[in-house]
Length: 346
Ligand code: SF4
Image 1 (tube, rainbow, N blue to C red):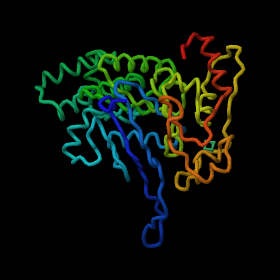
Image 2: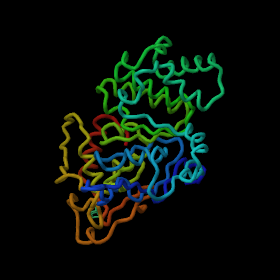
Image 3: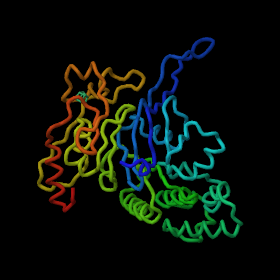
Image 4: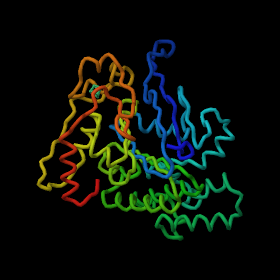
């Protein structure tokens, strides 16, 4: 892929949070929570990249690192050719308008004491020289873009439903004209019917403003509908990246196979192979040796405990970190039949 088509690259990015034990006199450092531990990825411009993994796998930490809301412990983050890990605070402030984060919780992410107009125009005040009238007009325009009414500008967050608040959050992110939107589980706190509306809105906006999305989710049920590329994360590492059709037809990592098998589908007369992984995700303080997935992997062998698998291109455009990538999977058959029955092209 041409480098000018890459909007974001991470090189061996890690975030370790120190873990302290309270002593009699002072706190003692007893280890690190390795939330993100060596992620190297290249994300193409103009695509929707679905970042999937169970709770606690590090995907929220990675999304905050990408927009530099938190500082990495090591590694580099390159946005549109600029190494943002070494940028000064003032240069980072100017660049931040090009990358915005939409939070999961539409209830907690809006200041309850500010009107919608104040919330949306905050970024406009920081990043653009505009008169109050120009700012007001822009707020009204943005409200219309996200499907709200001009009179909503005068209201306060508590006067809105969850879906409407998420629309306000999206308008706030759009106000500064970003190129990359990191959407951290933007619909998981919403009712199913409202989820569909917000997803449609996000897809319309992406086309209209030519955005790149990183869409973070804890399962594949939403992601496979809207993503161009799926990126699977497990215990601080990326274990598989592939275009969505390729990913669904030929999952190569055993963890991805289990995630696909968990996509809820109605009964289409297709025999379903649900793979239930044993146990919980191990602690990121002491991850297993070798492959981090080996304690739950149905295909683990001796080598898996000794050597850490690297993320390599196994098929064209399809990367996986596994010593024994899947050759075939019943899950792919099952998903193919389901897709045929439903008329989904995969
Ligand atoms: Fe399973 Fe081994 Fe592959 Fe890890 S490297 S996913 S343990 S087969």
